[in-house]
Image (cartoon, rainbow, N blue to C red; front, side):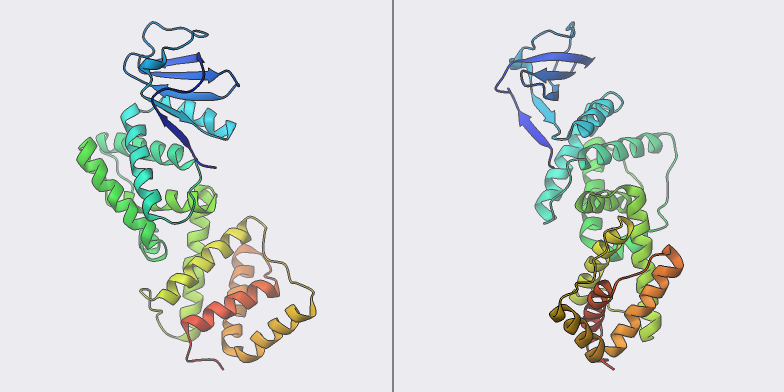
Length: 296
């Protein structure tokens, strides 16, 4: 689902559900849909149940999911509206650069993170990100967007956040791509890092992190890890052609299949989950791509 944002008036009459402050209202339209509307003085001396003057509405925010709409209402009650507006601008830029569809919740999670990071900065508190190196390597496009966000925050809010915040922002973006939560994103990143270590140990070489094949492998690992943690691993297909295909891969890519089995052992020992042959087969194919000269 994507956030719906309107500039200016809506098409039907809306009543005030809650006055958040002089410039922000929570409203409900004739069909029962809740929105957040902003405008200079729009909430001044207004009360619940009143029809708002739509000429005062500068912007309307509405989430498609009701739970996300409630979170948005709670968020605008505790952060400055300029933080929400800036985050909205940042996400518009991110959408132009990231091809994957982003979950509508990114506005909430990213605005909350940025606002809290700014508050921590003013209090003299800064967090380092122990996964920064891994995030830069495995999510380079998202990390670049994180850096762009820091530049925009510096220019528009005059707050110079720690460079590690770019990595935190990157994780929020990837989280919105995969429809996961931040805790799961940390697990996914650690699994990718662990898997890469297994692969490099097996082949006794460092992988070329700037290559297209490495990027494809990491993308595969992202979605593989997501399936693993969400209990949605690919099931083995019983068809004769599917079985023959898996056997062909095992025979012709023996060395890479052994590496895939080592990854399976790592997954079993670390996360206590068994990998089906279907997952092993696709891991083998990607391992062959990043090691084309060592088939046997």
